[in-house]
Amino acid sequence: MPAGPRFFLSENGLRTGPHSLAVLKQKAEIGVLRADASIAPESEPDDWSPIHESQVLSEELFPARRQFALGARPVEIANTAHLIASPSVDEILRSNLARQQAVEGELLKPVPPRSNKRRKDYLILAGSINAIVAIRLLQGAPPFDPFLVGFFAMGNISLVWVMFFVMDRY
Image (cartoon, rainbow, N blue to C red; front, side, top):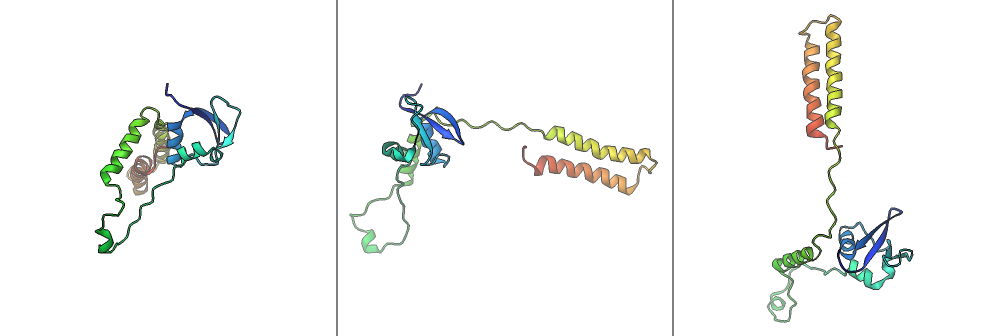
Protein backbone atom coordinates (compact mmCIF):
# COMPACT_ATOMS: atom_id res chain seq x y z
CA MET A 1 0.00 0.00 0.00
CA PRO A 2 1.48 3.36 -1.01
CA ALA A 3 2.56 5.70 1.76
CA GLY A 4 1.48 9.29 2.00
CA PRO A 5 -1.78 11.15 2.36
CA ARG A 6 -4.85 9.90 0.52
CA PHE A 7 -7.91 11.94 -0.40
CA PHE A 8 -11.55 11.47 -1.29
CA LEU A 9 -12.63 13.36 -4.40
CA SER A 10 -16.05 14.60 -5.46
CA GLU A 11 -16.44 13.68 -9.15
CA ASN A 12 -19.76 14.44 -10.86
CA GLY A 13 -21.49 14.52 -7.48
CA LEU A 14 -20.11 11.12 -6.42
CA ARG A 15 -17.46 10.48 -3.78
CA THR A 16 -14.52 8.51 -5.15
CA GLY A 17 -11.33 7.36 -3.54
CA PRO A 18 -9.37 7.45 -1.46
CA HIS A 19 -6.82 8.49 -4.09
CA SER A 20 -3.09 8.84 -3.57
CA LEU A 21 -1.37 12.13 -4.33
CA ALA A 22 0.20 10.56 -7.45
CA VAL A 23 -3.22 9.72 -8.90
CA LEU A 24 -4.49 13.23 -8.12
CA LYS A 25 -1.41 14.70 -9.85
CA GLN A 26 -2.06 12.58 -12.90
CA LYS A 27 -5.71 13.64 -13.01
CA ALA A 28 -4.63 17.29 -12.71
CA GLU A 29 -2.06 16.91 -15.51
CA ILE A 30 -4.56 15.46 -17.97
CA GLY A 31 -7.16 18.10 -17.10
CA VAL A 32 -9.71 15.86 -15.35
CA LEU A 33 -9.13 17.52 -11.98
CA ARG A 34 -9.56 21.29 -11.56
CA ALA A 35 -8.57 23.58 -8.70
CA ASP A 36 -12.20 24.17 -7.70
CA ALA A 37 -12.92 20.44 -7.21
CA SER A 38 -13.95 19.39 -3.70
CA ILE A 39 -11.58 17.14 -1.78
CA ALA A 40 -11.48 15.59 1.70
CA PRO A 41 -8.57 13.91 3.49
CA GLU A 42 -8.96 10.19 4.19
CA SER A 43 -8.52 10.87 7.91
CA GLU A 44 -11.45 13.37 7.91
CA PRO A 45 -13.89 12.18 5.21
CA ASP A 46 -16.54 14.77 6.10
CA ASP A 47 -14.21 17.81 5.86
CA TRP A 48 -14.78 18.84 2.20
CA SER A 49 -13.13 21.92 0.72
CA PRO A 50 -12.00 23.09 -2.73
CA ILE A 51 -8.40 22.24 -3.64
CA HIS A 52 -7.48 25.90 -4.20
CA GLU A 53 -8.11 26.66 -0.49
CA SER A 54 -5.17 24.43 0.51
CA GLN A 55 -2.05 26.25 -0.65
CA VAL A 56 0.23 23.22 -0.19
CA LEU A 57 -2.06 20.83 -2.03
CA SER A 58 -2.80 23.39 -4.74
CA GLU A 59 0.91 23.98 -5.38
CA GLU A 60 1.55 20.22 -5.40
CA LEU A 61 -1.23 19.43 -7.90
CA PHE A 62 -1.07 22.57 -10.03
CA PRO A 63 2.59 23.72 -10.05
CA ALA A 64 3.55 26.83 -11.95
CA ARG A 65 4.66 25.77 -15.41
CA ARG A 66 8.01 26.86 -16.72
CA GLN A 67 7.51 29.24 -19.63
CA PHE A 68 9.57 28.60 -22.72
CA ALA A 69 10.08 31.45 -25.12
CA LEU A 70 11.30 31.18 -28.64
CA GLY A 71 12.66 34.08 -30.57
CA ALA A 72 15.69 35.54 -32.19
CA ARG A 73 18.36 36.98 -29.97
CA PRO A 74 21.06 39.31 -31.13
CA VAL A 75 24.51 37.76 -31.37
CA GLU A 76 25.97 39.97 -28.64
CA ILE A 77 23.37 38.66 -26.13
CA ALA A 78 23.43 35.05 -27.28
CA ASN A 79 27.20 34.78 -26.84
CA THR A 80 27.42 35.98 -23.25
CA ALA A 81 27.94 33.74 -20.25
CA HIS A 82 25.10 35.31 -18.23
CA LEU A 83 22.27 33.55 -20.02
CA ILE A 84 20.13 31.01 -18.23
CA ALA A 85 20.34 27.86 -20.28
CA SER A 86 17.10 26.27 -21.45
CA PRO A 87 16.76 22.60 -20.57
CA SER A 88 17.93 20.21 -23.23
CA VAL A 89 15.69 17.56 -24.72
CA ASP A 90 17.63 14.90 -22.79
CA GLU A 91 17.01 16.72 -19.49
CA ILE A 92 13.28 16.99 -20.22
CA LEU A 93 13.06 13.30 -21.13
CA ARG A 94 15.05 12.26 -18.03
CA SER A 95 12.75 14.38 -15.86
CA ASN A 96 9.64 12.80 -17.42
CA LEU A 97 11.06 9.29 -16.96
CA ALA A 98 11.91 10.00 -13.31
CA ARG A 99 8.36 11.26 -12.66
CA GLN A 100 6.89 8.18 -14.32
CA GLN A 101 9.07 5.80 -12.29
CA ALA A 102 8.22 7.64 -9.05
CA VAL A 103 4.52 6.85 -9.39
CA GLU A 104 4.82 3.47 -11.12
CA GLY A 105 1.93 1.24 -10.12
CA GLU A 106 -0.27 4.06 -8.83
CA LEU A 107 -1.29 5.52 -12.17
CA LEU A 108 -4.80 5.17 -13.51
CA LYS A 109 -5.38 1.88 -15.25
CA PRO A 110 -6.47 1.91 -18.91
CA VAL A 111 -10.15 1.39 -19.48
CA PRO A 112 -10.95 -1.96 -21.14
CA PRO A 113 -12.66 -1.73 -24.52
CA ARG A 114 -16.43 -1.62 -24.59
CA SER A 115 -18.39 -4.69 -25.59
CA ASN A 116 -18.91 -4.96 -29.31
CA LYS A 117 -22.40 -5.52 -30.70
CA ARG A 118 -21.34 -5.23 -34.32
CA ARG A 119 -21.44 -8.94 -35.15
CA LYS A 120 -25.02 -9.36 -33.90
CA ASP A 121 -26.18 -6.18 -35.67
CA TYR A 122 -24.40 -7.23 -38.87
CA LEU A 123 -26.11 -10.63 -38.87
CA ILE A 124 -29.53 -9.01 -38.32
CA LEU A 125 -29.02 -6.49 -41.14
CA ALA A 126 -27.49 -9.04 -43.54
CA GLY A 127 -30.38 -11.39 -42.84
CA SER A 128 -32.84 -8.57 -43.59
CA ILE A 129 -31.17 -7.70 -46.90
CA ASN A 130 -31.02 -11.32 -47.99
CA ALA A 131 -34.59 -11.94 -46.81
CA ILE A 132 -35.82 -9.16 -49.10
CA VAL A 133 -34.05 -10.84 -52.04
CA ALA A 134 -35.45 -14.27 -51.05
CA ILE A 135 -39.01 -12.91 -50.76
CA ARG A 136 -38.76 -11.33 -54.24
CA LEU A 137 -37.49 -14.64 -55.65
CA LEU A 138 -40.37 -16.51 -54.00
CA GLN A 139 -42.82 -14.02 -55.52
CA GLY A 140 -41.68 -15.13 -58.96
CA ALA A 141 -38.99 -12.61 -59.88
CA PRO A 142 -36.40 -14.02 -62.33
CA PRO A 143 -33.20 -15.17 -60.55
CA PHE A 144 -30.98 -12.90 -62.63
CA ASP A 145 -33.10 -9.77 -62.34
CA PRO A 146 -30.55 -6.89 -62.47
CA PHE A 147 -32.27 -5.11 -59.57
CA LEU A 148 -32.12 -8.16 -57.31
CA VAL A 149 -28.54 -9.05 -58.22
CA GLY A 150 -27.41 -5.43 -57.68
CA PHE A 151 -29.35 -5.10 -54.43
CA PHE A 152 -27.93 -8.39 -53.12
CA ALA A 153 -24.30 -7.61 -54.10
CA MET A 154 -24.19 -3.91 -53.21
CA GLY A 155 -26.27 -4.37 -50.07
CA ASN A 156 -23.95 -7.02 -48.64
CA ILE A 157 -20.72 -5.33 -49.73
CA SER A 158 -21.74 -1.91 -48.40
CA LEU A 159 -23.03 -3.44 -45.16
CA VAL A 160 -19.67 -5.15 -44.50
CA TRP A 161 -17.80 -1.95 -45.38
CA VAL A 162 -19.92 0.29 -43.15
CA MET A 163 -20.15 -2.09 -40.19
CA PHE A 164 -16.49 -3.16 -40.03
CA PHE A 165 -14.45 -0.41 -41.68
CA VAL A 166 -16.35 2.86 -41.26
CA MET A 167 -18.00 2.48 -37.84
CA ASP A 168 -16.01 2.38 -34.63
CA ARG A 169 -16.76 0.00 -31.78
CA TYR A 170 -20.10 0.81 -30.20
